[in-house]
Length: 112
Length: 114
Image: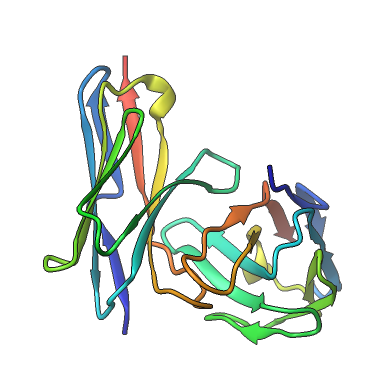
């Protein structure tokens, strides 16, 4: 069966450092990999999508990589700030009408 | 911006009650989804719909039903609420049946069943 693993349940880093979150998947051949942010008590919010033929995607301080050989995506936040503290969810997805399945998320805490 | 609105942020119900969770989206999205989220278990798909009057079971449909009479509205129904249905319920919608299924979520409905 399909399995999605996010490297750790919680990650603490110092303000200004780069946070790196990992998403590994098995028994999947996703065409896309999506990342979402979720604040406590709120619904997830879409951040970035990367396609299988893209190695890297950037948006402001965010960078996502997608290695289909390793079956892994890395999500980086550079110059992290306390406001980046949240849970980050990854979701490999196929094309067409396949419902998203999410990893359990990594709770990031950026300490001032 | 697409908005997905869930009718209730917090509900408290008693065991055996029938519970309706309403979700409305305002951007003509084809697809709508209901997930529940529990600590340690992540987001789990209950039901989804790709068209009016159409529904498909997700991973955990037992104890739930859904209704999609209009394109913009997707209702989740707990026929007889039980304590193990205490959870955060999240509705989401997405535009296209092709390409990536990027979801827009509502704010969530936190249900407590006593």
